[in-house]
Amino acid sequence: MHATLGIATVYRCIRRFMEEGILREIHLPDVGTRYEYVTPEHHHYFHCNLCGHLYALAGCAEMLESMLPAGFIMESHEIILRGRCNNCAKPRNITRKESGKK
Ligand SMILES: [Zn+2]
Ligand SMILES: [Zn+2]
Image (tube, rainbow, N blue to C red; front, side, top):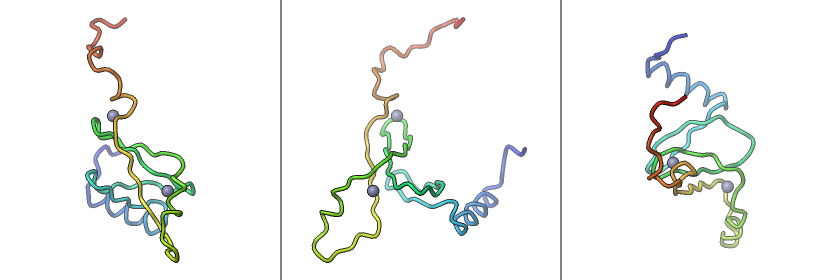
């Protein structure tokens, strides 16, 4: 396999996958544009402020619809939770590497 693909090739593939409904584009403020596989399950994201990882979360806040004024129809929404992932939430002062792993 080729380890390196031209960026133009990558984008051409992404565009085709999006046309075919395999990938979709998500725009996240501060994070930029990401692509993900289209899954039937509706979900949201957790963005770790420290490591920058994006985690897909299951489920949704169900009260969103009830926030709408009468007569409004919500067609889509995006929610990004921010904070620290379980790796980054660990205390940092005990992460020095062991020398000589066995
Ligand atoms: Zn993290
Ligand atoms: Zn949702």
